[in-house]
Structures are given as structure tokens and as C-alpha cells.
Length: 93
Ligand SMILES: [Zn+2]
Image (tube, helix red, strand yellow):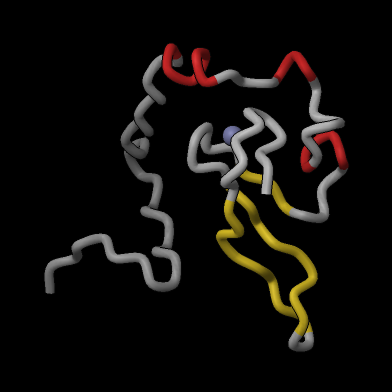
């Protein structure tokens, strides 16, 4: 499957939402530019043909992209979010 943003041909399905035994949507992700989309989103988000040209990425632009900013620490008094199912935070018992 082709990534709508960078046109890489190896985007993958990372999960699907089952409903009554049949998947009603899938989440897909590109391992090159990390763009992720749900299969049921508008063609401007899911289709390379309709993806906005101003938001496209080339391999050169990906290589030159700055590092993703780190997530800052929580503010004092803000409770830690609950762990996602299966998430291992390295808790000590
Ligand atoms: Zn991509």
C-alpha cells in the first residue's frame, strides 16, 4: 500500500477495529515518514492522488527534518495518565 504523504510503497496496516467480527476500519502507517491514517478518513488523508501537495514529503525532506521535540514532563499536580492495555512502563513492584 502506498503512503499518501511520501509515496513509499510499503505502508502497513498496524491495527483494525473489529465490530461484530468484521473490521470496520484499519489504521495504516508509513515506516518511512511515520504518517498514519485511518482507512475511513477522507481521500485527502488516505489517497496519494488526493493528498494536498503542500503537505507531501520527499525522501530528501524526511532526511533533512529536524528531530521530533521531546514530550515535556507533566505539570506539578497533574496525575499520570493510565497505561494503555499491554503497555509496559517498567514499573517496579
Ligand atoms: Zn510516508
